[in-house]
Length: 416
Image (cartoon, rainbow, N blue to C red):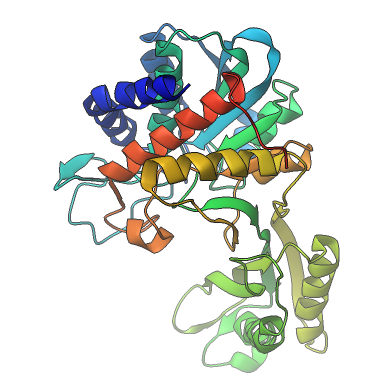
């Protein structure tokens, strides 16, 4: 078995330049979300894997659902690699949609520039890097012509930034997949076993516009919105007192990330729209939290005549929690991480949320692990000059490939 492991690692080293070029191609097709026109990237990925002799099933989400959701096109991919009977089905999931690049880049955000052993570009770290990690880990495993048992599935999806419901959520909803285990795209050396839940609300405050010289004839929506802002931010000291028992996760958070309103400098605002984000630790009940936040908002303006509120839920993302079987993934990844990197990746939670939770909601053990630096901020993920050290890509690919060998190639496992 040791010789097999060495051959696996040697294949990855021998094909690493090809892997880097593959990642450059992944980066060079923009998938900004919004606007969310992601089908062209999926078509490119399908063509790429066809060159390896693989067939990518294309599962296009109906356009009316996509447009109602606020995006333009979504085609999710499943690449199925069945082996002999008698083993588990393990899925590898990475998402191709990205936040827009924004300002402040010193390198082209869609250039895939490699400089001093680092690749730059939007999604170089999160998570087009793991398209390359997972594809080349599977290619390495298959190149050895071993008697594998079970199956692999590659899930390449295009709705993480909006919540995942039309990404992995769509594949699961349509009964297109039901793996036994999932490894989803990671952010850093850590193995993420749990993450926060997230509630996002759109709050529309309706008043009555009026001339700025005669404000008494109007109902100021912005004054009402200010009360709501004060109520939201006034809760932060209480939220900081709530502590999670999950390592890597601290306290709940709440913020207003966007405010739009008014028509001109000399007009009393008749309408203000705010979008807020409430992160919930795994121990919190999302239903109770949402009811409490709605009551907080409504109570803030209850005594203001002429003010009308609309509160629309944009997202309710549940927490990822460890399930029976998650420990088996963690044990294998940690042992292989020790062999490849000389240190075992830590298993911990994260205050972020990801679409891996959707597998967990179906009872499928899922963890997040892939290419990334020691800490998320080092990669500039979702910021200007997002980057990935290429050696971290190589290491992650080796760790994932060895873990696939553990699950499908008959290596001894420690149950957990």
